[in-house]
Image (tube, rainbow, N blue to C red; front, side, top):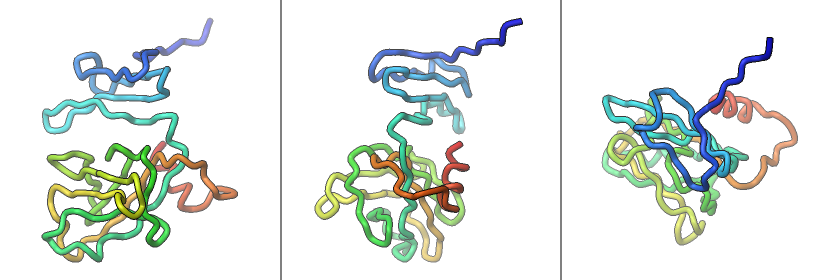
Amino acid sequence: MAAPVVRLRRSATQGAVPTTAQLDLGEVAINTFDGKIFLKKDQSGTESIVEVLSDSITEFRILDDISSGFNGTTTNFTLSYNSGTNFVNTEITTAARLLISVGGIIQEPSATKGFTISGGTDATTDPLIISFVEAPATGQTFWGIVFGASAAPTTGGITEELAIAYSIVF
């Protein structure tokens, strides 16, 4: 008996993204030209298509803690890593490449519910900015990871941080 073959919805057209009408909830679609994977989600009755993985995700970076700026009023913060290195990676153009926690709660990458990002093309004049829909309160904790930095990982082996990040992704 031959092994069963499972085929996912797919497209070989550059830039093609499935619509919510084309996918069932939880169904996976692949763009074989772009190397991207998508799925349909439903959050409180609002359906959307999210990019799960792309071929450009080759590294992650743990973000510096920005919670010292949380005051219940400020909503925009510069994101950095390695104790102050600002992003210059133009590939991080979507908030879906970030996993963000404020006060122990994972934030949704959404302009109406969680956060958005902007900038990131120049470390000095245009750093990567995260904008929260609601200003984080004083004393709330923060942690974040950016997936999809363009350079290959520079570690010689699997570190604890790398293992934790990959367990989140997969």
